[in-house]
Image 1 (spheres, rainbow, N blue to C red):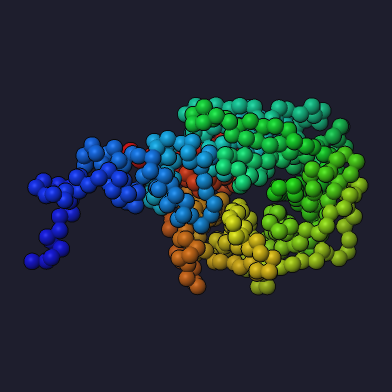
Image 2 (cartoon, rainbow, N blue to C red):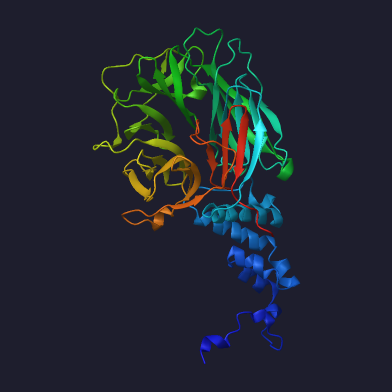
Length: 475
């Protein structure tokens, strides 16, 4: 007889034993359940009342929460310190994200919701974590939607400006305060469209501090004004803005098809003086985005390469557009496409204690992670993260999840292997089809993806569509 057959897989069912599983002390059972797989933990609670009660304790779900964070290759955390959460709230937080990871790689029903916005022009930003959606409207106000609220009610986060120009396109960029255990971030609010006519009054860059107030279903965001300064030039468009601490970088594209990057010390910039430095990329580079990096560095992404610049000492300058010199700025490091195979798109950036990772795709539908260490003496490195045997068009890509289209018609979710599991040749992408929905293909602007909870947000005319791709597990 196989010796393994003598082992009862359900030790708690042994009745006449002094060493029955259920007779173990509660603290021992708690320690065991702290290390059980989350799915098994849900099954164990069906055995008896004692295990059900222990499986719902704070100690068990604090351990599950910490285990989940340790598995991720990018920074992830709850909106508040975990001692503010009940055991049930911690359980819900962990299971929502476990379910998102599990369901992302299989075809499953998708819950689709929508919000009507009676504005012709607006832009959307999702705060990391996937709960809060910011909508910058054409009247220059910013609305905030709680996507965990069944009614998705909105509140006015910042009021409309006294703007006589009207109908400009505004956008927002956020900078999460990683030192604060409760959700807090700076937000810059700026006009971003192509300004071709003289404007009346001032079009300022406005910086706000936004803090989480309340808890649970009663939580809300509250914005407090910090600073503003005018920085608007005619015949330009703002392609991208990056905010990190006191540094604000914006990528400017002129009507003469030239680009430059202004990096401001926003706290020291006023209507009379801009404390800034200006970076000038090569004329042949078609600009895409910029990212302020730790260590006073800046990454510039064009469709052909990624360039890292040092942010030079800032000087007090007149608040006018810079004169573009003949020679480009000196670079620290460049990832250049010598063979012309790449057409880069920059999807997002993630920050951890050692490096910043830029998520990129190429026109050959490949996914790359460019990791730029905080240590200035370390060289950035590019990882070919995945490949597919089929043609895909990626709308939005994160560290582990992507959302796109196959064969110009079928919407798909794409799962990627952990970077630490990749070999030298990459790996196959895990592709699953999303069932039919009312959304059209070829989105512009691209949808927003929250990797935390597998949530996709996109807009079409006056409607905002929210796709929740995970099913809440029964607890």
